[in-house]
Image (cartoon, rainbow, N blue to C red):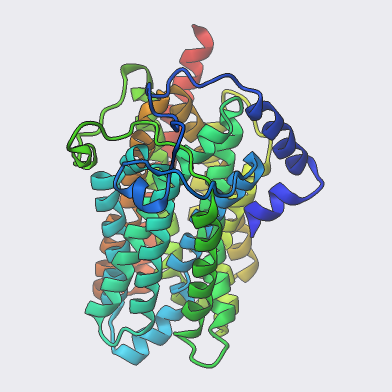
Length: 458
């Protein structure tokens, strides 16, 4: 897995992880942690006691994992869940033929995942602050197992959508928890916390279609990918269960601790508000492009490359997201990185339509890679900016809210694209879609450039 390999190799990132572990272990107590939130003598945190927000009687100590191990676990969980959520991308043509679905039916199945994800982020994005990061991740893995199993055995659109919805719930539960966990594990390296978060997230979304295409060549084309993925998810439960959990930063208090889990209205401090809306706008645009790549793009790309191979189509669908993930390793800096990245994204999405018009697979590949690189660099900077301006006690909630708007980009425009495809045809609809995305990219780039110039004059 991308994050695991990155942290375990002998290169610069592996050395960074080891250095960060030493620095974290020598840090003084976190002054932002709620008084009394630490583990008291004679108590321990089991999974069930975390979910009840109550410490258990002293017993088995558990695995006191190193900082590096905790980084790998947190990143691997969200990576694996997102792989599972995107295994279906190259399988949609098979499912469409087997279940007799229209293009709009495929977009409904895809959108059910995104809408469930967004709803859960709004209702439960803050849960890991109260039940603990480990408990939230375990809950996410269990729900992800259920969603994958239902999707694999679906025999109609309703079951297909139900499985996708559960996968969306699982990803939502893990999103805020993993991002906040990485932030807490790297308190002196907030930029690298954001890099790891986006590397794991974009990497999982990118790897899903490619892995789904490869596993679909096994017997049971639409079920084999989910059997393999379910085995990996079940294996993840072992280190999560054994892990010695760290206390929640805002444990429930009093006789009714579950009141803390009630939905709450998102709030962002005045200092972080501008950064929040810029990150949300860039995220919405980015995931509009990603949503297209993961839903209707396989059929569109197949026409350009004249190929029916599911592994090839899956790899093409994940190319933009793979480039976005790898861009997290680039050291792009400067006041004008965001407008430059968005301008590259705008030009690249327009070239996707040109690739179809000119019947050029090479241009398709180049445009997909450039779109991912431009998006990845721009989104990392704005994401890191808002994360750095949010107080630790509200980190999971605010980051989840950013993702609410971001993931809406995967649902609303894609549903519109699915409707347009049924009315105007795939080629005309995609052309209109990429023109709108390109125009939005240039508009946000202009806004980011104006902000950068204004900041330079202050």
